[in-house]
Length: 76
Image 1 (tube, one colour):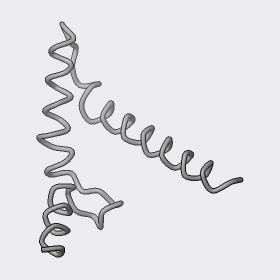
Image 2: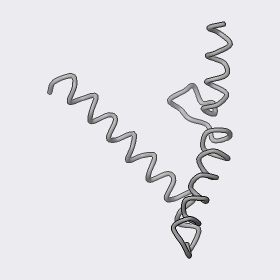
Image 3: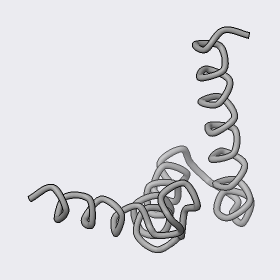
Image 4: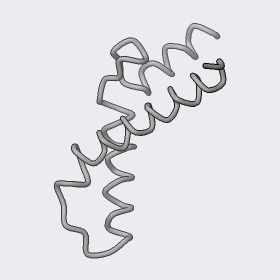
């Protein structure tokens, strides 16, 4: 298999993993009366929990925002 195909496969599996996580941890817990309600719940989940609090093994078992802050501090 060519390198670009392996990279594409990894990106697809990462996306599938993210969507599985968001469905289990957020979307499946609600009944949505409108598309705007769905948008609000997903936005709050991503910005209020997924990026700020939930740990991610891909970035050293830290929340994404903590990893970014640490990386920016190391560069400066």
